[in-house]
Image (cartoon, rainbow, N blue to C red; front, side):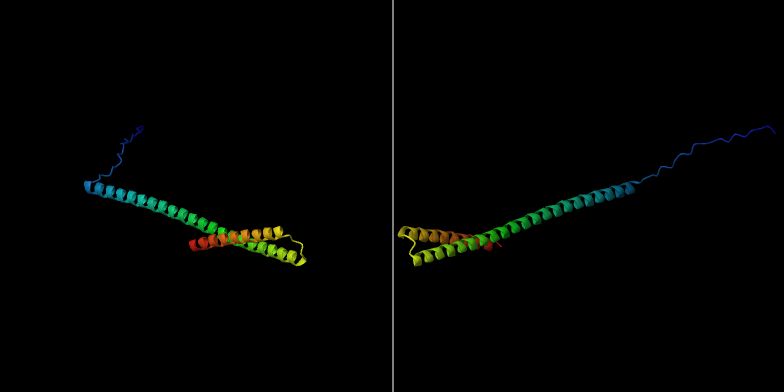
Length: 132
């Protein structure tokens, strides 16, 4: 037998699923719901980021305020130390009789100026502490 058989190949059409109107509407609803969820998630992410920045800003402001309070306390302490030194020099100079009346007046003016500065610093300190 010398015959050859040829098998015929018939192209197989891929079965395209038939989507009904109900299924199509359901798919569209699911897509819309997924898009809405994604939009809400993005909105929540942005809100969280904004809150984080707000909290960081508040923290920096608090740190600056605490630094300002500490600086003011240091200024007050330095001023009080300066007043003590001036008063000690004035007492020593008076007891030794080394100071002229003009020098005594200068010492007293310096002491008063420093005390005024201390009062201003204390007032500013109270205002800063109220902000806490």
